[in-house]
Length: 201
Image 1 (cartoon, rainbow, N blue to C red):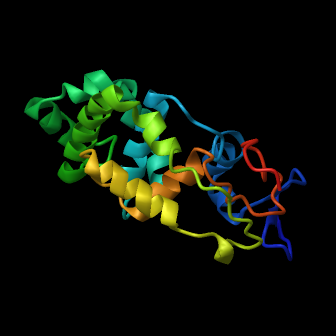
Image 2 (tube, rainbow, N blue to C red):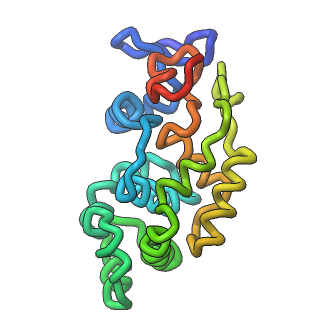
């Protein structure tokens, strides 16, 4: 791998990427195949919102490595199933070494599933999240130029909190926006820049 003057790192395959993509084979695959591509379905957004909430204070690699365990523990992030979780489920999850055992984050995920159900009567989670898509996207040349929050992420976090969601601050909301393609923070020279199809550069 070689660091380029434009902030990217050149992979052994000759493709330039944002440096964090090289944390592991798992991170590289996530960067190349998923991160920044549009997600507009309820289940997909609930999963990513839940995982971003669990990531708070931890590295994304830690969460990604446990993703399949999370999917098993939270019934494939089926909103109705998670919304029906009770105290016994909370205790079960607290005993599950395959996920992050944090009572506050676990109860927030269950509460967020219930909030997602309630939102269906008012357009749904996807409408709420995507209504905060900005009019433009950052165009970072280096990692230092990548924002960690924005006016839109602050507004999204506030909207989610008003609807009863927890563990959704402006930084978590921005990470969600990046992950689902609402903003494109691939470095300008990365081969994945523009992959979402939403932001012509």
